[in-house]
Image 1 (spheres, rainbow, N blue to C red):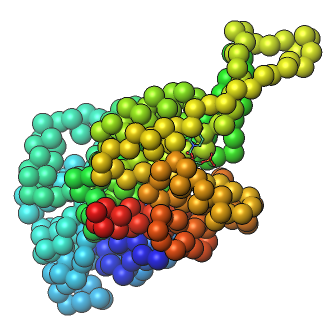
Image 2: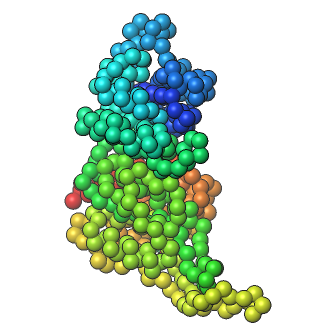
Image 3: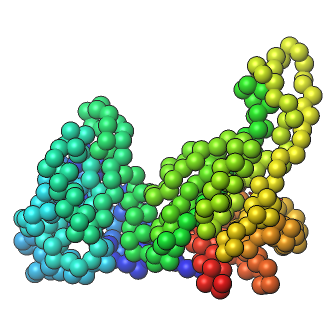
Length: 401
Ligand code: C5P
């Protein structure tokens, strides 16, 4: 299985003095989990917000702060930056952004930033007034023009109870940006639409027929496609954190998903139906809330449209169409028949009765089937790792054409 593009990479994580410094610890943990070697640097000011013990423990080596009397090297000002594959500054304060713009190398982090040829990701975090101040806007624009990657802050609750733009991007978004920067951009220029989550079919004004799909596998496919340079639309029934760089189209029912997918399929190069679409829906939806006192209602069901089969019949030349199949028995035979009937290029089949597989889990084990190729089994792995294999298979299909 292909590894994360972060595996084996030396990543300097620069932590500056902001309230969001505690989130850098989670960023470090995730980078290490992806196989990176994390070299943590804290500025003097960062020590006011987090201690070194946790970050040292969760990174790959002890935190460094000192430019002078540094135990790691007699010349730490160049040593750290020269050896890096990537530098991430998270959180980046207004002051550290200004210093970086000016090349003002007063501490170990700023020296590292200008003594490197590695790509740099800056993740600003500050109060809204500061983020919108012309000096910060200008500094960010200059950094961007130099090729520095900026992971924009989010809107939300800030220190002191304020609300607004300036909150540090989520650890997921920061790690996704690192994957994008270090990963192969082998889907650059390709548009991908992914559906995710289970549809909800209304019975009355408050009740629905739903299923156990969490949407996690679809989100992982969308995140991986975006990380590899694709422009990604995610048609979803769930509200998990938006993967970095994906455009969200929220839907609820099979009919809404059908409309969104048909519209997207007309313009996208790759279509992935990872959603668990209801096969049946109530034929009539009661207007208000059905009353308990009226007794158990008889709910007549009607079939929903098979969205994927429709997309298969109208597939555009060169388009790659991918389906998922959740099975409890005869995995390969059932998936094979769906592959043929729905005119798919690839189907990702999972045995949802196996432990750790399918709905709601963070892991999955799948079999990939293509027309005219032997099935490929992928053992239990994280949904993101499964997504990587699915995207590899999509790229192989496109390359073969
Ligand atoms: O036939 P089955 O439901 O097992 O097929 C699963 C695949 O078909 C999935 O990719 C799912 O998203 C898609 N599907 C669909 N519309 C339906 C039912 C399933 O697009 N009504």
